[in-house]
Length: 115
Image (cartoon, rainbow, N blue to C red; front, top):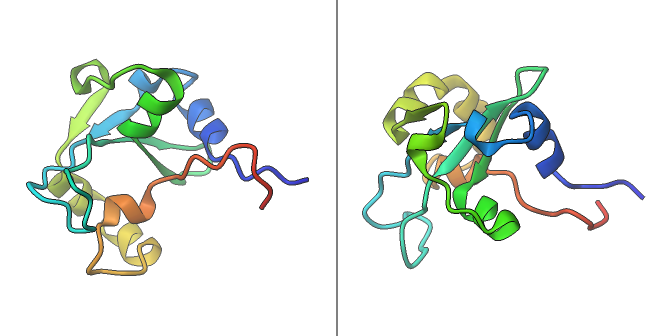
């Protein structure tokens, strides 16, 4: 059985502590993907191969019960700064330019399921 859990590589990249990640603010007043409320933000890490990993603050809260406080993270980026800094990565890895790039790139908590 092959594990599809994406949380472990993220935790490895942040050395087991979400506070070592960079917080990316959603910054939207209303969700472009139709969610009833805007996202709480995302945690950004990069693995040993330079692969970008985004995990939602909501996923961290669900898994650990902790509320992600942006000021506790190693740095904070606005959505605009993220889009600017990673524009080429987004171009190649976010298939729908009309949809939210943060949600498209976000790792899903699929631990314990078969691929």
